[in-house]
Image 1 (cartoon, rainbow, N blue to C red):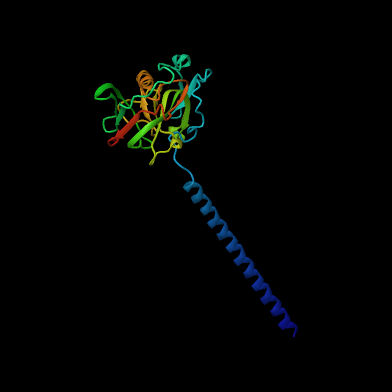
Image 2: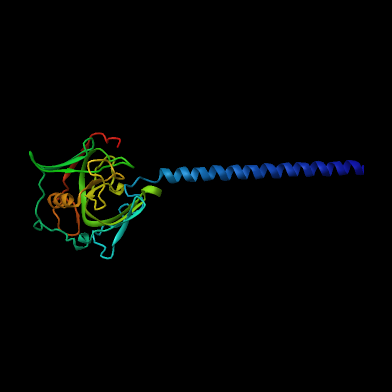
Length: 246
């Protein structure tokens, strides 16, 4: 009888050990599945932003007077002193109405930007569009103009942190590009190879060209941060073509 009892205890012990192992395995698998669900959910809930770190956090348009340097492609670069003296460039009368005949075209294939007023071509500038992330195609409107802003994004070898990015014009539409996606036309003092793709999705212009476009484009410049309104809607921007692989 004692021998049978000992065998019974051993059997119960083995059963308990098996149950513990099963529970441990179940808990471990549940933890893994839960972690995967969290990761997938976080990615599904995260939208792309052209400046993946700063995005559009600061829309004041204010210049950072003490910003002497930035980082581009992981390397430190100087911020030109001329940018520290930027003015808002107010060139429109308060309350002036926008001109619906203004139209900006960005040709991705040829890396060029054109500014038309009616049938008249006023501007033709080289640009650098998306290399690390595509520049969207379609029709858009400028929804805010900023004298300057800080743009930060990328990672590793293509990391950048650029203060006082001048003459920034964020664009959007009511289809697939939201304001929070952070796409913009702006000046680039770090001198990318204009005429070739070299951005994270934005349309980069030489600084002086960007200033001309900024002063001309709607909404009319009223302050360091000028929003489009029903009275002063932003200029239509059409982006088309196919970005070359270079």
